[in-house]
Amino acid sequence: MLVFVDESGDPGLEIERGATRLFHVGIVIFADNEEALSCDKKIDQLRKDLRLHPDAEFHFNKLKKERRISFLKSVAQYNWFYLAITINKKKLYGKGFKFAKSFYKYAVKLVFLNASQYLQSATVVFDGRDSRRFQRQLATYLRQQINVGESRKIAKVKVQKSHRNNLLQLADMVVGAVARSYQKKKKDYASYRSIIQHRELHSQIWPK
Image 1: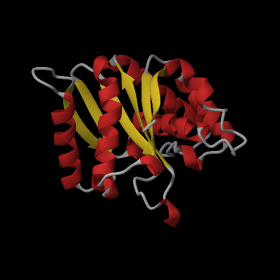
Image 2: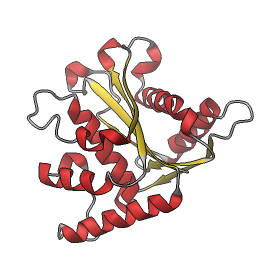
Image 3: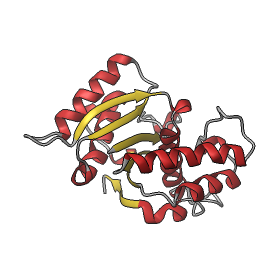
Image 4: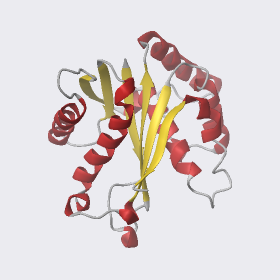
């Protein structure tokens, strides 16, 4: 089992200084590694079909509408599922949330708690944008929170570069679609999430 994690927005709470009001974390789950490989190959093929450079990265916020739709339609046929959580930062209180890294770890924990019933010996892959020290702390924290008792929900935690990992890019596109669905002022707010609706296991706003 493979799990890919990404986020949209920023974990800062200073909304009046430009921080995003909402913070989204999403995870994409492949129960079957062969299915993940097939989806990975499809993304490679999509680059060729769109006449992109072989190293071009699919990043939701940097793509035009047509390419977002092409990507999501291409991958929606494969057997993967996603869960997402949207944090309304205006409703948060408590000193711990004022620290971006603590806030990020807590948000990741929430989405993994929602996913725990679906996880079994999962290899979890994060994008390697943070320091190695924080990455180690996050891996330890996640195992401690999710692997309760004798359970082995999470077997490994890895960090890879998203520009080298198609399925991390898939996670980016999925959480980007979820995030856009909350931006009602955007004309395309409903254009993307509907394509992958059948792949959604759970999504919520927190706190209520």
